Image: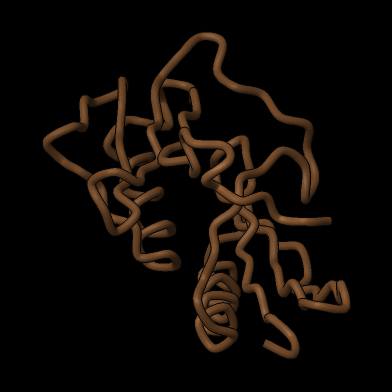
Length: 154
């Protein structure tokens, strides 16, 4: 598969946020605390407290003002089929060490919170690259795929 030259197709070139609807109870003080403990402790995401409205919305910054996960209460909330990998969105790390550290954090968190779901770490070999990935779900209807792209012969 050839990668297209961006100059031929100007316009949006990356996703900057994901919006997920949740039950209002998950956005109460306890639910938000659980979400911050996991996504902050594992991924390093930061709640934007000035944007939080109890039982209505919460926003996680992904290290930048223009990359975020927007959580909003709705009835009915988003529903995804159970099981991993299922419906998901992906985040990319810059090194294999970073991925392995994140997997260790996920497993450590799961040791004291059985609500963490994790699909075993895998490596897919595409010849020109190896895709290292792991899927994890915690409280949200969508899981998160953490990926590291190991370019071969680069």
